[in-house]
Image 1 (spheres, protein in one colour):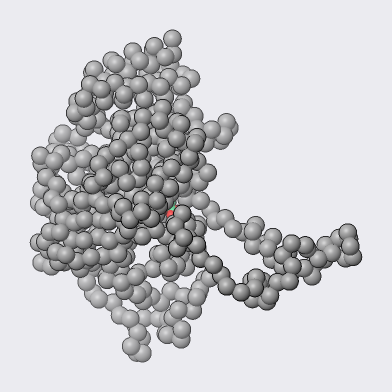
Image 2: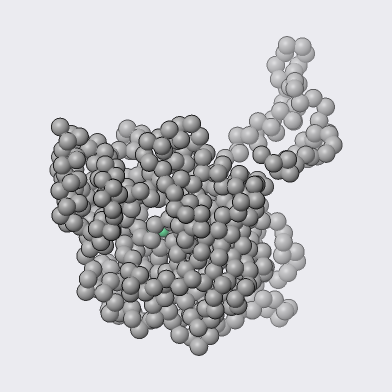
Length: 490
Ligand code: HEM
């Protein structure tokens, strides 16, 4: 650890109220060897504060590491979006990026086979813009209503208290739309060597809109300039045991050394008019847009260059929300994204509290938040005596009359509608494409990783249903997987 990271407080130790402490080794007793006194304010305060040191961990993505950085625009994108932080080549915006694993609880290990979270906050002059993605361009499901069930199968079983292969493969087998995403983490990229050696993706499709009010659909890609580097299952097993904080340590140490990791930022852009008839539903999170249809366009550079000074304050209490948009950027009708627009703010209010947005890491850095919301736990009085209602006649903040994003047309009546399928949409087509893109060696490792886990399933029907999804993606994929699972199960 570098010397600068140590901060020394000067002067005598005090109580929380600032009174000097005479003895921090011996609590106060009634006589020598007698019982402890309630008037020992220091003892009571220390024990009470200690009991309250933890806040609820994130229900997913509990383990993470973060760093501040700079985003620089390298291409003119004003034909597609009016977002000010993207308005000029060379323009720079401060960022904070939190990486994470998904399924493990806070006390787990970094070197796990699991997608990695990629939560990026841009502190723009029009408010904070959060992009809360993963290191994979797609996801396991396409409707937010399935998310709690999915995560229950990834977490500990209510009876055994452990993650159970039965639950994981039962859910995936019964949710064939997961086949594409499942193929990712069990392939080579399933265990990144570090957070620096992996890509990030916005995953969902978002709306960009320009000054003229034209709409474009956009997908974000962050390509690592360090090169993709992964761990084998055997390497990861050792590392997770020897150094559970391997990825967090690597990130911090590389920044301390002045080796700042960078990513090249690309977007795929779809004109609004293409969306209705594109061969895949562009708002289905289980699908990518093949690059031959919408080639990635390089628009910027992201560099991480400053470590947080206090992990609890800046990483544990950091909050990111897919609902944090800025003018020129908005949501798409992706049903997963729509559910997430609610879920994150709700999680923050529960986990960090109603004033979470105003902590130093979370508040806007390049502008200020001007709201009429007030009070609540740990309100800091920042509004002083300003009026707390709008409209008012005292020069208070006013509405702009200009929405951040353009409206989208809708059709039909209300109902529990499935995500519409476009001409080439099946649950398996892109999983098969991904498999066929792999080299022979990559395919072998994929089969080994998948079969090792499926072989742990206790019921044949659950294992068979899971294998059948891969068979439908590609006949060879299914055949090899079935043989490998049979060999392991005997
Ligand atoms: C509808 C589906 C989803 C729901 C309901 C959901 C819900 C949540 C919740 C409640 C948290 C914890 C937030 C907190 O306590 O601060 C979280 C964290 C996170 N989720 Fe999701 N999630 C969903 C899908 C996704 C998808 C599709 C992605 C990526 C493409 C994703 C990426 C993340 C990341 C990166 C974090 C960690 C954020 C951080 O570093 O603080 N989630 N999610």
